[in-house]
Image (cartoon, rainbow, N blue to C red; front, top):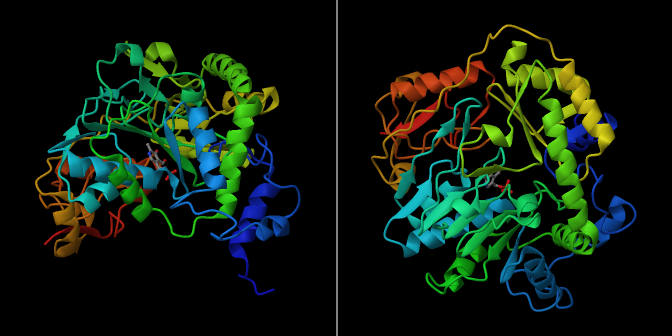
Length: 454
Ligand SMILES: Cc1ncc(COP(=O)(O)O)c(C=O)c1O
């Protein structure tokens, strides 16, 4: 076999060989939670990799088995309708933003938005009204802004923080709950007024790239939902994978069958584990009591601050990875571990032990202050399509960004197209790079070549 043939497959198999502990997506954790949709080998699965035939069904016009799946999923989620997303929560977010932006005169969007919001803004040629975000400074993490009506909001945050519904006076029209599946299944009334983009793969035994677009029971016809479906049809592939859909169905059936009481038990265990990790000297753990009043925390998210070890999160992650433990993210001085019912006392103990072995150091890495926010001086689409100049980041000060800069993970842009690049943002990005952040930056790599409006 040529040296580089099947490099990707070999890399995946090499990772599997490590029998690593996954504290990251997908929620199934290499099959520890959930059953395979069919018994047997990849060849069996390949035989089910069918297209839309007269005796299968069509995702874009479901009439048979897929409409049954949609109804059963809607019942699971307590929604009026559940539309399968096979292009990630990304497609649902982009469709919801474009739909809403088209219908309301000014779209309020919490600035803690994922970059998939940009796709919607670009398609709809919308000028967002950013709602500023405040930070929980003790942990350098954003708090979700208080939701407004006629708005698009994102919660829970990647770290699992959400506004407690009891304290909310209004809900956003559309909610990005890409990280909200376990909370909603545990009974938190976590949803938009009309629409909720519900992640599936991040926390559930549903294949990577899958999510649901939920039309809520109270959704009114304004803006017309038929237009939302039109956006979604445009943004999803015309060749949806039958295997992804089969995996989504398996997750729905399993959760309906026996999943929910498992969730409750696992949530109690995860919560107790978080308190146990908080007893370790060398790390600080985000616990619900650290949040301001009116916010809750997903019991399955474990955010660990490692600067007491004298390490950046990336350095601590490398130490853990050498022991076969992989975190969901390493960002700044924080490691985020995603627990699910796939974890048991054994996996939790290994993580506890490994965290307990991290060195005790001096406070070498100070915290990352709240990121500076910039002024939007041009519609994102105008900037995106404008004639551009490519400059090194350090020379972009005062220029209007033509793309975005998002540290990834978590994938929340610090600068959106149409915003002015300031010296504060440049300094902040340099600081992030020092602590090992990687970036998504649209059409360019920000430090070497950043696109600004000419
Ligand atoms: C808040 C938020 N929304 C949407 C997405 C996109 O989800 P997906 O990766 O399923 O497309 C992500 C991805 O991490 C996210 O963090």
